[in-house]
Image (cartoon, rainbow, N blue to C red; front, side):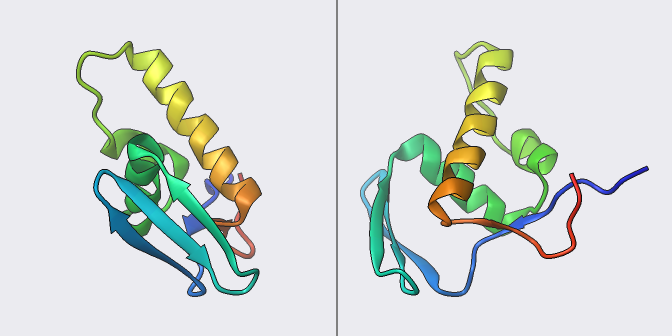
Length: 94
């Protein structure tokens, strides 16, 4: 069975709280992003756990359709990857 892709926040990416949002600075590209409350939850979950399924399991949405919430987590992980705010760990398979 292939191992699930593991994600991490690179050392050159740091976040600073802005109320419910999170300001993220990528020092290697000098880009700055503001993550809304949902994206912040996903980002912070990736700092605690590493796989997509672990992130999905760690975020509990009250009052939301379960499948829609899981799809939103998946979209957010993909968006954070595209922005290089998170990375797939070298050698990870998924």
